Length: 308
Image (cartoon, rainbow, N blue to C red):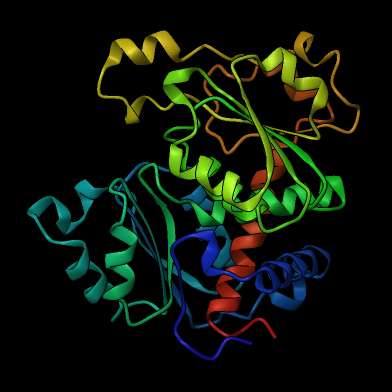
């Protein structure tokens, strides 16, 4: 289906039709995995992670291996030539000679733009600072579609670090493309959604509200998207310590929620969801990681033109 070089830096690089195609492909991969085991035979994925990661890096690697391909790369800036001062542009130009497709995580916003401009193979942003995280959003929307049966007409509660949460920003960008969704933004004032994302909600005509109360919001929700307060985004440790446990989801707080509620979290979890919630069938955050692997399989196939 894909005949030209493509990069995915943010979720808006994929049309709604392409999102639907990727979700349908992920569903086929889940049902008929044997049909896809050799699709990427002799293909190599480079995973360039300048920032720590568990789920994103390992799910990309698992995705490529399950497609019959191979993986090379590094899991920290200190083990790359970045430690010697090499630029992102030069790293990508070199790795393009070694791999058929590249994915990169970087702490600096905008680094994937530079990478894509210097890549001669398909490039995927695996997260850049507090900016974008498109493949997490692919995992999120597949989880929502599978658990709710649809992607429109839902009430989404986004809770926690909405200021630095790149997963939140990408999810809003994706869900605004589906009609009649309502958004409840749950955060302290210090971590409220950035004004540029608020403006997207306003300009789209979406219904939304801001609140500091998780308990008040929960009964209204179809989706609760919890996020951690990210220590690595704070310049002042005192501010982090003051805010890190401001929202903690417990079974008691779920008593008035809908039976059909789906609880999502991009992970890693710190304290914001009690482990007691894991036993609730509405907890979908570990299933979300499986959806993420399947969507990354679909995206790799799509960008390599091997999806049909």
